[in-house]
Image 1 (cartoon, one colour):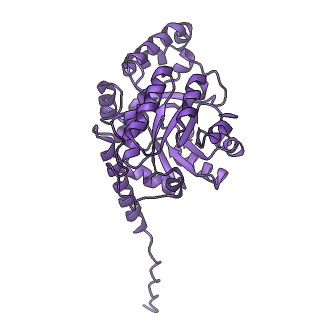
Image 2 (cartoon, rainbow, N blue to C red):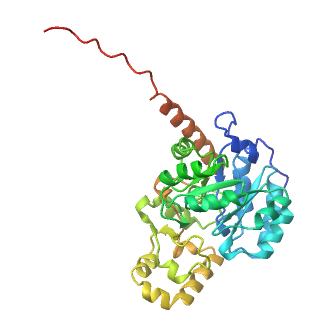
Length: 348
């Protein structure tokens, strides 16, 4: 298959463009989150071809599939894309393959990348690091990270405790002039507009892209997102008992997923979950390999309440940009000159 043309499915670039877009070589400030095996070359290429930054996640992906996906994405797009690594389950083999692929962006989550930042820079990649607190953002800035993703607690998967509305502007202030990307609770153009108003230069989106035509997850998972209300995307504290993080960088991070009988049961039996952790983790990992993770833990953020249909990626980006422009325009209409004070009438 030949690489898609640079304008294939793209949103008109003059509609919404930030300095980070120019730096990343993308047309619109929308980044697809690196969600492990819930991503693919097809999904990443679709996002990149539509003007955003697609991502291929390496977490829990066998090395042969990492290599296959990295080769395929080069066939499907000639636009920039990112490769994501979860550092709490870091794969040295996947890292070597990533460096050989020389993506435009290498993104990290789960801990601090340390010396990996320098290695990424040596192959010409920009480094994007996801954080959940202001303190983490400041450490990342000191270590030479190029872009910082401020992830609010509304996000799916492992997320922190501070909501994006409070976290994003604090991170913007703390790390300026390093560009900040907002994540958590964003699934439409109004969220994109709000993120820009908070000082972010782009958004990092997971849940909305899971419910896309191109996402490699099971149709049942996509339908669960469409049917879910925001309150159905709950923090699954018992997962920390079943699969404790080997890193203390994000000690307060807890998985958020759509409620299932598995989640409801073990959330109320945490002592038993810890006792049977090995067996339960094995069950989940087995289903992940079978693309059936959603039967137990369908990762999704509170933005699921904003997702009402499964759409192609290019349509998602088009709608998001148009909605954002409309929201920004309408917000600007609220700015008006102060009306003159009414004349005070003298006497009765």
